[in-house]
Length: 215
Image (tube, rainbow, N blue to C red; front, side, top):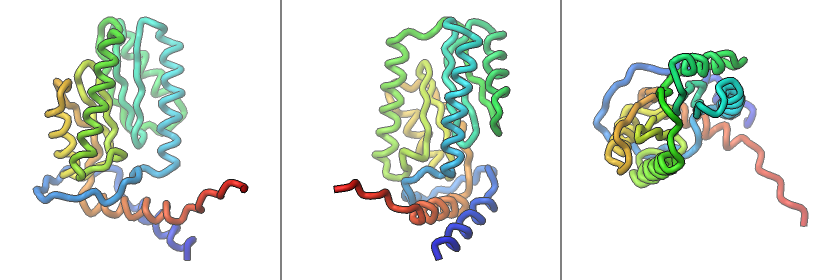
């Protein structure tokens, strides 16, 4: 029975499109799941993309550039500062040279000197505020939205419903320290989101429980 549930869940996940046009709805939707909507394999791949690309870019561009690589469902954001347009283009080339199935690249690098430590600390605090306020809404899980803040610009990533996108946007635009919100969401219909959550719940419930430590 457990194997059959896993097979059905995987088949359902494979049938879902990566992204569909946004359909705005006004009805409030409660959080149906707290788990990540990405498969475990994609989560691992996202982490690997971030680590490998960050290392390659840093090695190529050196200390004059500060490039952050954020990957969510193989959609990648490049943010930070580089000295010139050539360095901005080179950072993206280094990313695309990685042997992974990167779906989309958003190159949001700015031209200019590296941001100060105080600016970076302020951005980190702003990100924490946005995440905390997302939790407070009780309409969206903190695992569903990735927040990256650079010089007061909050980039929002994730797999969300139209309602979740609007809630996250409102939270971002009304948080102290945010001067602009850039939405990089993959938006699905509420039904598709429910199906994704069912898939992840089924897969998680089929995972073996961790072994108890020896007495």
